[in-house]
Image 1 (cartoon, one colour):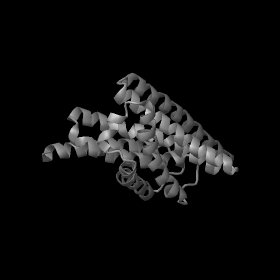
Image 2: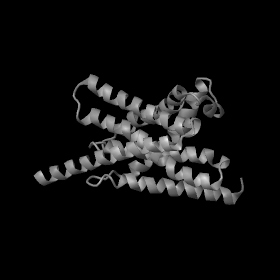
Image 3: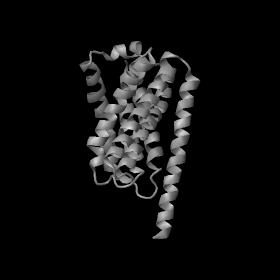
Image 4: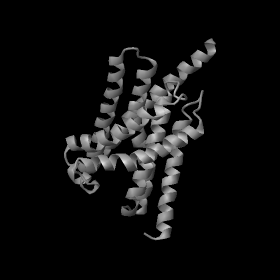
Length: 232
């Protein structure tokens, strides 16, 4: 890969990363998170991809070159791609990010989960960059941070629900594990339709439905914050 191609690819990755980073961050209108913590979360997302998923796959005897070959099965897509990728992101968030004092309101689950997922997507895009033409590089760097964020936000809001609106330990566990499983299933379905079944309209449909749902959910959260401010 020559320097021009490398710089172009890095430029695509930076642009896509910055766009979606700003997009999700401005959703937190009333109490924005410290930028230094968002940057740490983004870096943690990169590390969770580099030190997490590929190590996990190696431990269970699957090389990264075999992932797409194995993903012809829907179940394998869910278990090898969806559950592994969402699992390493979830663990990084749950064990580190969501223990910070700044995690103090419901919408923070979305903000930090998306920042971590965008970091994960940035690393993935860098890894796949040499194998893609520039139109595919551009398409991937714009779409991958969004899709990774949408799947992560599902369990991010699940953790928020468990932290802020649930008192029972059992319910806390169910909200966190249930939303993690849901995100893994949707992630696996998306990859199966996109890469194995080659039905891009079905993959796009999943993204659109989840995106609309989350937009509505976040709008309700922001209205709740506004009403709370007016009552003070």
